[in-house]
Amino acid sequence: MVKLVSAIALAVVLAVAGEVRGALLSAPAMYADAQAKEAAVRRALTAGQPAVTMERAIRTVLRSYEALVRQYPTSSYCDDALWNAARLAMDASKRLGDGAHD
Image 1 (cartoon, helix red, strand yellow):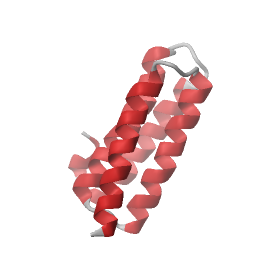
Image 2 (tube, one colour):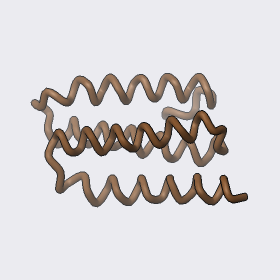
Image 3 (cartoon, rainbow, N blue to C red):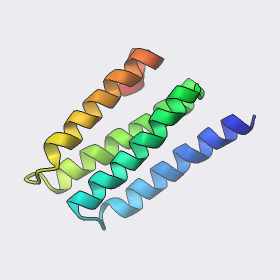
């Protein structure tokens, strides 16, 4: 039960933090923020958190990388952001099934 509550709290924090901070950060800061979120999600994936919670958290990370690309399309961080998002989606698909990255 504690793991489930922790996973849900993680998903909520990631969602809220990404939406609020995304418009206020520079490209390097947005990239670092997305990487930190991705690291947390990857740790949770390894820990075997429930699939539904993980799918939400993964989508939040993917949106963070996409927000960077949309807000700073000429930034040198864009290619890395897209690569990291694609890699996370692929890894999530392998662990959780094909619907995890839609």
